[in-house]
Amino acid sequence: MSTIVTNDFNSISNASVSLYEIQCFDSPDGRYVVTAISLTYTAFVLPVSVFVLYLGWKQRRLLSGAAMTHSDFFTYSMAVIELIGVFVYASYYCGSYTRLPAMLLLGVFGWAFIWPAQTLFPILTCVEHYLAVVHPITYRGLRRGGGVRIRNIITGCIWLICFAWGAFWVLLYNHYYKRVIAAFMLILFLIVMVFCSLSVLRVLKHPRPGKVGSNKEQTDQSKRRAIRTILIIMGVLWFNFCGNVVTNIIRLSTELSMRCIGEGLHFVVILPSSLVLPLLFLQRAGKLPNC
Image (cartoon, rainbow, N blue to C red; front, side, top):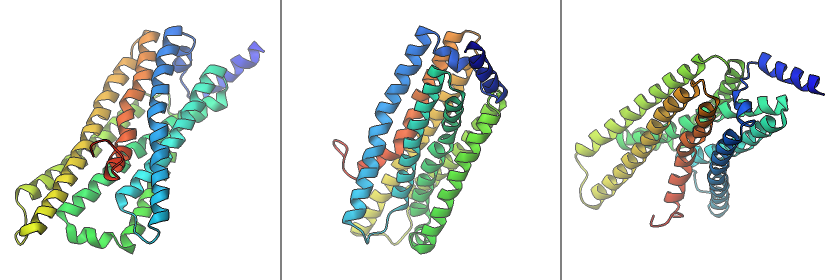
């Protein structure tokens, strides 16, 4: 039996899956840290994602003829991917506990699968707010059939990117430069965020002529909501970027306990990215206290 287990883990190693995460479950301290933090992550993400999808389904039933906003569509897509993430995380930890290579590989794939969505869907939400404030005529045109088609195509591309990134992460799991690529991608996304933020701030500071009375006040409120949303998402992405830098440095430690701590802190880092769109959606729906 031990020979079979050894062969299984040799096959994992040949498939480019590192074993230090598995060793965390052999250490009582490592097992406690990783399990406690991952369960906390699940306790936040799972109910929020389910509640968002339930509200979306309920709204579609009550307002069957109403057009879905792009932000809501991105939020629903994010909630679906987060639910997938919760289940693949469960596969990852079951594979680590039970030493089942197939479950472990599925978990590693899923771990990477959700990362692009956690970044790209918030970015698209910011781009939508940018268009609504800076290019309102273009935005109104994109809310019709052509814009919906473009949105659906972009969303389909994000799903393909998620699958490709998951496969890339598994194949190059022991190569550290994959994390460098992820860091450069985050920097690129942050540049987009800064551009959107500065553009909206410029429009707020120098409003276009012709807006008077209540229309001007209503427009200014919409712009302020847009910049608030953009700044919140940008702050979350900055936290994601800085947190990933810290956790990756910790993972370079030669001490197993420190590497296990870095593994657990990964869930702390990605938690805001997982929750930002659902919480903004719940705020718009009036489901959060004092909102």
